[in-house]
Amino acid sequence: MAAERDRSVAPPTISEVAAEAGVGRASAARTLGGYGYVSPELRERVLQAAEKLGYRANALARSMSTGVSHTLGLIVADIGNPFFAGVTRGISDFSRSRGFDTIVLSTHEDLEEEKVAVGVLMDKRVDGMIIASAAVARGEVAHIQDAVSRGIPVVLVDRAVEHLALDSVVIDNREASRRAVSHMIERGHRRIGFIWGPAVKKPITTRRALTAAASQSLWTDGERLNGYLDALDDAGIPFDADLVMTEPKTEENATAAVARMLALENRITGIFCTETDGMTGALRAVRSSGLRYPADVSLIGFDDSSWAAVMDPPLTMIEQPMLELGARAAETLLHQIDGATPSGKMHTLETRFIERASVAQWRP
View 1 (cartoon, one colour):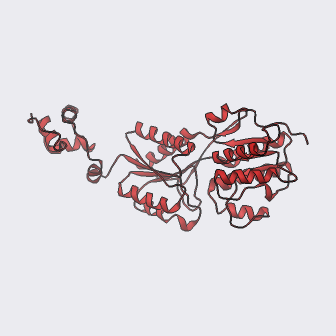
View 2: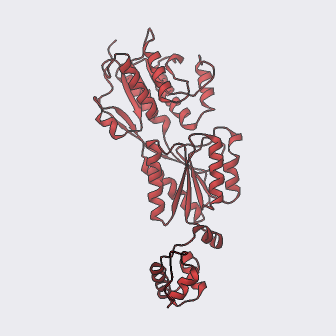
View 3: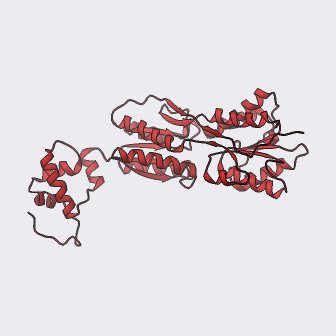
């Protein structure tokens, strides 16, 4: 056995683990690196020696020698967003159960930060990437195509990118929105505000201009807007550009937009919010206007959470399967790491409409 060493000076090496276990360095390296054949008896001796010495493998060195890092890269728009936090947990839990660690980078919905993040993950030699991309146009996806061309499997989550033939794991945003707005219409509402639409520099006055702008926005935004328009069409309700928020997506802008819609001569009686910040902005505007929900204005939001259920009255919400989205994305990526060919398939999961008490019957 190896002599006692002062571990405060430097961490133990593979050679020292091999000496402690009484095996060759190559056998110790195969055991600790997770590649090649090692007999069960020898493997147990090496692992016991490594534990005794406090050995910790250098993941980067291991990946360089084996070509496998057992690490996934995840790029999300905002790790502070409860939705992305849930998706991240789903990915991390599933990947960990398969022996993979996850490196998470947040881009703040900034495409340039996303490009840097892809480069960082390639430098880390991750085995694959899951990306919630901010790209919306063909010319914005070169960084993802570069990763794919280098043999790195990539799966998209939450957002599809039409210019990339990659597997994506998403929800049926369009149907979820159509169902929510139809729920209000069935209760007599015809003036329904949409928070939020595509951000534009010039005011939009026509439906054609709005849908054109949406086609240049994030896929999720466009799909949710189309669901809103589908519900209006189904009910024969004419489109009104004054009822769609087209300012940049912030809580402050949502508050101002809802206040403006509530001040219209023919004001809104319902509000559909497609993200949490939009809902909190709407709630602020309703309260500031001296109105109450649902007596004066009805509300429906996306991304159900515990706070929505304890509001008074509790809020009707669309629940996304966050953990399942993450787990499915990780599963799809690991299949590709194992050698499966990307199908370019959109894996669509269902949402759940949770009806509570924030939508009232409207009687003009």
